[in-house]
Image 1 (tube, each protein chain N blue to C red):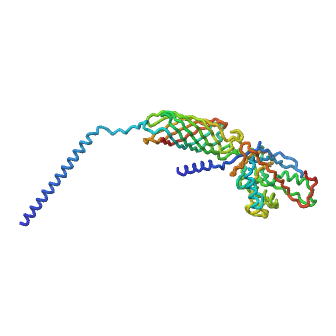
Image 2 (cartoon, rainbow over the protein chains, first blue to last red):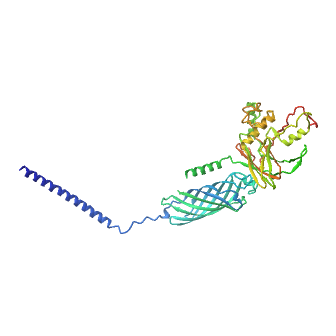
Image 3 (cartoon, rainbow over the protein chains, first blue to last red):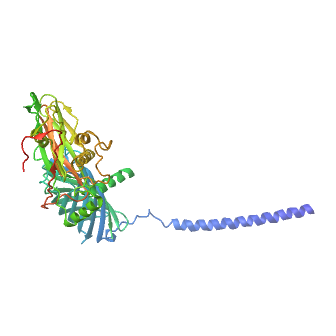
Length: 218
Length: 268
């Protein structure tokens, strides 16, 4: 009697467990069907949204650059040096911008065995520039040119005849090309630019400024 | 990478500071090495000399007043061109033009606002004296002299008379000029190592900087000296453009020689 009752209880429990399993299985099945029907709607890989250059910020912009400046021609006695630059400008149109550019570079002199060798010299360039840009999606190619003033930190070059006596400032011109890559952010882009620089009072062919920059448009 | 950026920034900051030097070169390099007969017989190398007057501006009325007030307070004259504001050094290159090695040396004399020291002028002055018969010929030393160097044939040798060397010249010239220190003792001793000869110099002295440098070059074979005076002006006293120049009238230094009497009366 006691044994029969125990068996009966076990059976009841077994029937109950079996019922719970069915319910769980049905729920999974339902979920699986639902998921199945959702994935069935994707027919190809999702396409990354193309940046729309129209949505890039334009107007007032600033950039900061780091690179090098080296003199070519007779002035090679001015060793290549590190250059830092900063620019503030305004995009008048998408293709045209006006800016003010300041660059400082530091150099060591090398006039062979002359006493002028081994002296530190800084060159500061300040120019007003006009920039033309051709945007190709996220990338843009640009050309710029400008005029301004250059300043030497010392008169060392005048003691070697590379500038007139005691001349430490000069009119200067520059012109260059660059490539700009706009990030998916509305504001940031970075790029590479290189320009030929002619410092009028420096009796040499000119100089080349190359730098990478980070630009922020407001 | 971080260190490179730090170094680059530091270079730019240092470069942008207002402590940029100015350089002054002589009209032409000095050439020496021709032999000339010495007074004592035999041959000696003739020195070649160049003087450079540094173009300092005149003090403003305000500056003059301030200097006068400070001078009254300290009890001695305070110079307009002070050593602590102006650093001077000389870069030079000696070129041996001959086909044989030779000896060369560079010497520096000069003038501050109070005293002028010129070996050639001192020797001329001694020439106007009648020395006691038992006296030795007086020794005349330049304010500063590099050690004699041997320059191989057809080679170049570069050197530097540092800012601290010029500071020693400043100390010595002021001691023998304004404060009447015993000149040979002062010139022979390094005043940073020993105070010999500096006893009369006040501890609070404001050292005058040289405004005129007289560089002389001696060589035993034909050689050339190219040099450059480098001035770091922290007081903004170097003249800009056509500013009127400061031309002090220092008193020429003449050594005291016991028993010597002038042959020729001094010029009025």
